Image (tube, rainbow, N blue to C red; front, side, top):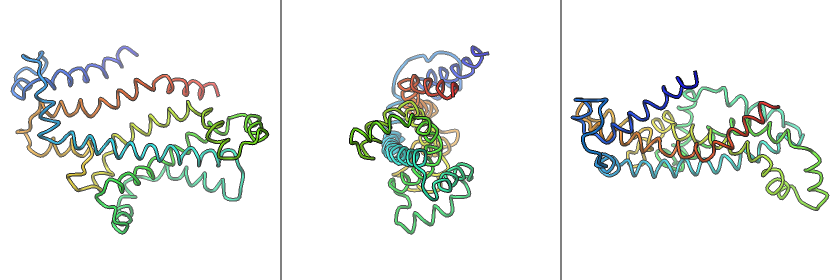
Length: 263
């Protein structure tokens, strides 16, 4: 079963990679044969002529900034909710959970007017803040269990050694939640990198397109006259960062899943 699943995933990716080196005529003439000549013209065309390079930079800026902000805020919020009891703490936690169940398309119209009134519509900072709000409930929900399961004795030992709340969090408790941080960072990265609905609705300035909406515009702009070789090259450029991040952090992801299973 695992071999069948691997074939279903790997074969389309290898075919896409192989096709990215073909011309459009070769793709239609012999879609499953090797390219007559392996060249990178499609990648150059996709990067420069179709501005995939600019969209790639926009995506890195938006997703990178949103990921840093949401990881810091999410970890701090989850730590406080998990380790301290104060009036309204449970209400805040359940509101975070409710945010996970709220359909994103119902928030598009309010978000549009909020960003427009703030002067952030069609801007990368506006899209970054929206991504943060989108990913924060899941981050808090995911990290809550990790901070809740940490031993009280370690936190008390930090207090005895004279550490304040901030130092206890950043130097003692946060490093202990590293497996959970790595896992939720990967999930957030994948979710934000592939986000499509939010940029389509809130970022209509073509110079500020991110990769997901740029790919849709690229594929639909010229119909059958589109350069399919460059399109497949753009697909490879789009998915490569996702694969690199997964390969780098797969050990942390497997470790956190194992810990969750043992609990």
